[in-house]
Structure formats: structure tokens, C-alpha cells
Image (cartoon, rainbow, N blue to C red):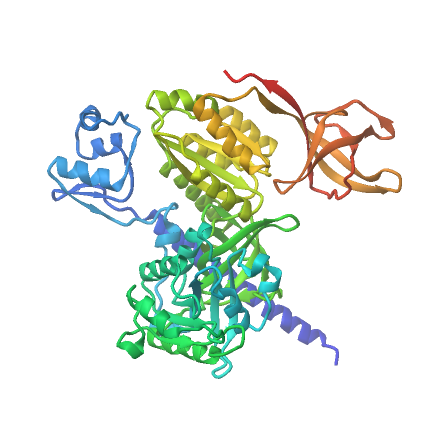
Length: 632
């Protein structure tokens, strides 16, 4: 039956009322955050105690205790440290100085834009809390069946799509226990050594850890590593002895080996539940799920779904079509479509939410893993997120987070360039070589990190202070400058705006697409044996505004030159969301119907790329040429 005008008016009023309630809720939340940020904590000497809220420069500390700056600089000079008044003291140094001048010290937690994600919390009343699904992390050795177990628990087939059946990315999924019909959230973590840090972050986001050990293999090095992470996380452990269907299965051997490492089964007088079974044969899985829910019941896991969402980033990557994509775990509150949030140094409005089965949804409550699209950059796995629903506050906090990362990495040493490494080593000025790595995929990032950490330069420690997926950004450049780091891009490019900042800051950016070339370059630089360098000179950038199909020449990119000049003989790269999609040559350069030799900034032109037709609106065509430069 069609709605009457009266019914339509009634619905419109109800929707208007709903929107007004939502607006008022957003306003209250934003006001609460602003009030927290305005709260001031006393710093300086209070009744003989030096009270501080965060890092201070030498000048700020001296002012607080009414001492000359030179006196404190001299104190550090006697300890062999050449510092100036702008040097930022860490907590240990603040405490050391306070004691040196006869004061006790105390840190007060003050809410700032830099620590808001860690400190801001809305208190929950007991009646606002409801039971939530336990969050479970599966850990263990690389081939002991972690992903096969998860595959069996959620009745899907993940392993067939993975190289060698090994987990290639961190994901989170939900399963339903058949007997109780209750949900359980699983975090699946890669098992190989390169992802140690990722797995550790997974432990920090979990309520219960399942340690998977193969009955025919026993405790292996990565099993021990997983035990360490589990113990550090301080959460309950359940052991699943997998592959009990194998002829040489020996569960008693597994129990004995684990007991030597402090993991003692309940049947031997310990407090760790052990479940024997087979993920491949679906043996013991119901018992495992029941045990998880029993442990969760003891832990009394609850959350408040009726507040703004907060949680943690599980995994993130750059999608060529959708831009930055983040897999996140909602820990508190309810996440909704169009929410504005900040995640580490990134922010944005959520344009799409997908559940673990890739189904589009409009909201997600506590303990729910989802994939979101809408952030301005790729966040780091382990970053905390918080819904703010105030675009300006979100942007300000994200910028403050990025600046904090840069400031924390600040070092008082000379600018490092590849050409200067040898001389700085010889002069004793270079003890730590800081490196920032950005690449097109997480696999490339980990491969580069692994190769770099194996590189040995006498007297120098290599420290990878940041690594991530996606285009090279202003934040990367700022960090490279303040931390005196080399900036490496692997199959990714900076925009023309970022390139300009690189030139202004004097940062040494190295772009590669072959891993061994990175290692070879660093080794030669340390020995002072760099060959004449073939340097790319960026000629210009064109943004694709439209595309046209032509039966004879393929795809024609209708472009506007946004920087520099593009020449007909230039080499070109097609860049999508900061990632190199194709590297080749110009097949044709035209203005309207005429062939032209060059197109300058502001001009419109048509470009075809030799042997390549996958051009989309929004892509950037970067023109360059190769020049030989002698290394001094």
C-alpha cells in the first residue's frame, strides 16, 4: 500500500530528529575532546619535586629549575655529549638531571594531540557494558598449521590462495561456535621470522592466544618466539596440538618440550588447557572453540557498544583502485559509515566498510574486524584509531602524531647522504645509519628490511626507523631530515610537491626496483667505491584527465601538464596512488591532432605509451631522462 502524505511527513520528521540527535552526540564528543586538550597540568618544581608531562628541551628544563642553559650543556659535555639548548631530553635524561640537582621527579599524564589516542577514554558505567566476542590470536611455527586451523574454524579456504600455504598478510576473521552459536574473533598472523614485530602487535590486541604445535614436529624456534610474545602480552594461552592424524604424532613429547619452557598442561598440574586434534581432519575443533569460550567467560570480557569507536589497525596496504585500505579491529564502541577517525598519523572519513567475508556493512561493534576505505594515507599496523567525527580535530591530531614521530627520531648529527657515508665513518661521526623504507607492497618492505639488516658495515649499526607501504610523503621527508636518514623508495614515487620538499630539505632519496642494487649501493658507498651514478632527472608530470580508445594506437591519455615539461623523447612512468604501474616510453605526444615535440606546464595534450593501454583517469605520467653524474 502506498504511503500517504501524512506518513511521509511523519517519516521525514523521524529522520530529521534522528539526524539532530546524531549531530548533538557528535558535538558532545568533540567538546569532551577539546576540554581534555585544554586541561593544563602543572610543570616544574612543586614542593621539591620536578613535575613534567612529556619531553623537554634543555632550554625548557633549565628555565623550569631556574638554572643557566650553559650549566646543563656543560653537564652533558663532561659526559661526552655535544648538545645544544634545543636538544630534546627523554624521560631518563629528565630524571637524571632532576636527581643531579637534588630533586625527586614525577611524570603527570597530560592529554595532548600527540598522546590523545593513548590517553583519551570515556568512562563506562557497569550497566553500559555488554558481553563481547573474545579476540584470539593464533601463533606458532611457520608450517604447523595455523592458517589451516583458522581455515577449518571459519569453514573457508584461505590456504589455496596463498603461496605455499603460508600466510602472506595479517588478517582478522570471525567464526561462530556451533554448540553455543557465539562469535569468536580470530587474528591470523604470519609465522615467518620477518613478521616478528607484526605478530607481537597482534598479541597486544588479543584476549586469548592459541599456540599451535605440530604433534609430529614438536617445539621449533618460532614456537619459542610465539611463547615469548604470549608471555609478554600477559594473556591466557591455549595450546592446540595439531596433526594428531599423522602416524608419527607424539603429543606427550610436545607437552614435555613445552613444559621445559614454562607451558604446563592442566593434566600435568599446570594451568594451560591443551587440546589435541587435527585442523585438516576437523578433529578437536569443537572442543577448542568451547575452551576458548570458557576462558573468555572467566576473563569476563565486556565492552560498551554505545560510544564512538576505538581500536587498532591490524593490517594496511595501498590498493591501486581504492587507495589506502586498512584492516582494523573495533575494540570499543560502534564504528559507522561516514565516521571521521584518526589512525596514527593518518585521518579520513570512512567511505566503505567491509566485513571479513568482503560484504559491505554500515556499522561494526566491539570485537569486530573490518576493512575500511577513506584514510588519507596508509596507516601502520599496530596504530591505534579513534573516531572523532570532527574533521578539523582529526586532521590536527593526525598531523601532531606525524610530528611526534619525526621529533622522537631527531638526532643531533650531520646530514647523511650516500656520498658522505665513508667520510663520516672515518671521522667517527656515523655510528648509526638511519634508513627509511617505502615500497609498493608489504612483501617488498619486509624483503628490503631483511636484506638491509643483514648488511655489515664495520663500526656502523643500521637502524630502519620507519618502513611502510605506499607513496613517499611529506611526513617521510620530514622524518628523514630530522633523523638524518637515507630515504629509499622501492617501486614507489614522490609527487612533484614532495620532490620539491626533498630538494628544499636536502634529503637523500634513492629510488630502486631491484633489491640487490640497494645493498650493492650501500656497500660501495661505505667503501667509497661508488661508480659514476646514472641519475634520473624528472622532466615533468602530467595528470590524466580523460582517456580515449583508438583502434590503431590503443589508449590515448588526455592530460594536463601539472609540473615541468614533457618531451617526446622522454622515458615515462605511469603512477597510480604513488605506486609505479608501468615504466616505458612515449609512443605519441599530440596537441589536438598535431604531433608536438614537447608540452609545458599548464598545457593540454594527448599521450600514448608504447605497449601499454591500462591508463585511468587520475593517473600521473612522470617523464624523465637518465644522466651520468660523477660521484665526488
